[in-house]
Image (cartoon, rainbow, N blue to C red):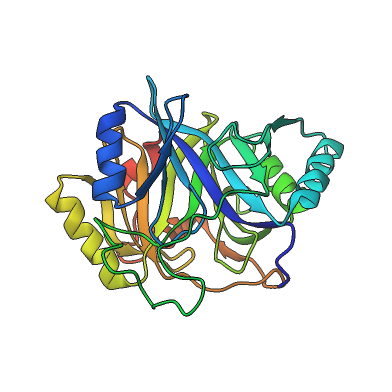
Length: 309
């Protein structure tokens, strides 16, 4: 597919309860690269293989959770067009000036009906991944520290009115539905998995009465062996593991879920499948929702459903 419009997930801003504890976790256990700190108290990170300046920010707050999640768009003309399209669709937007975030251009911010702040941006500084842009080596010696994911991949958000959220993402932003889980009535969606690319999902939403909640932020690894290694590192560092290593039915990825020291859930995963906008969406019925989420156990972990930040 032509890569126009919204390209991919770009960054997430997370709240942590103890900044120094959070820095140690994201830098040394998860293995992200610290790239800067700003006068608002935010600390910036990226994965070792990402080229843009940042994909994860953390700041200290009284409660854990998500501030906002952002997508990169093709160029500034696209940013302007999508801003206008959102307004025409009845979604109020805010323009945040370039430089408010380190190394990041102007952003368009808006709130979706689930209570989450979503951002779009077109420009962010390329600081590289340690590889040359001419005749590079296949990997970077000493780049991998801790779990060392290759990218911040997607997030799962909990909140109400996910039908209205789906409308905005599909009709305005150009996403498409890849998989969904229906409730007992056979038609109402419990969860939706949406893509703007050829990935099985770039963002997902689950119906939940409280708005603006984070279920998890997900980081990609290259292999099942790396997922198992991540589990070892989590255990070595006494990280609270939610579930896994296991496999999803939805999107087919292999996965492990755990919590950062503040209680924000994160995922390290690999796999999944390639998809395209012309593919028919996959449906999971209520009686098989356990299989869809955790294919091996074929049952849900109650904490996985109810614990959010």
